[in-house]
Image (cartoon, rainbow, N blue to C red; front, side, top):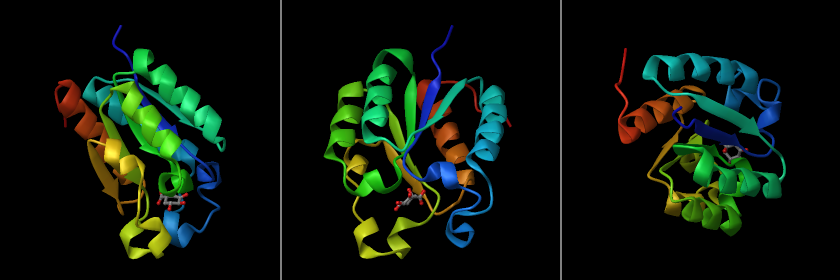
Length: 150
Ligand code: DQA
């Protein structure tokens, strides 16, 4: 059985739908998960979609991904801009990692312009809202060699 793509979401992303919808859109994280599971099926992939507000739990999941996942898609929320530990964990996973942000972090406050995890990412997708996760999944399908169906 093929390994799933781990889709890991960091702090405050459980608040999507309620949280600053003018920035993050009105979809809940569950709406995004359901859409991604459908898209994954079309692409011949499976996804394991998770969210935590705890940096330690995110680290444990990235460690788990090393043997348990075929690739990583990560929206690390604010830890993007602060966490060398997440960078190190992604590095140690030796997996292709796509970094996703709903908002265009470069149009926002300067403290959001830097990302530690970009240094370990194969690519970065930001500014396309929830669609960014689907774009990331298509990139993963390409990288892991599945057919890009419709
Ligand atoms: C975010 C951008 C981060 O700066 C912010 O802290 C988030 C969400 C995004 O998806 O746009 O929590 O990662």
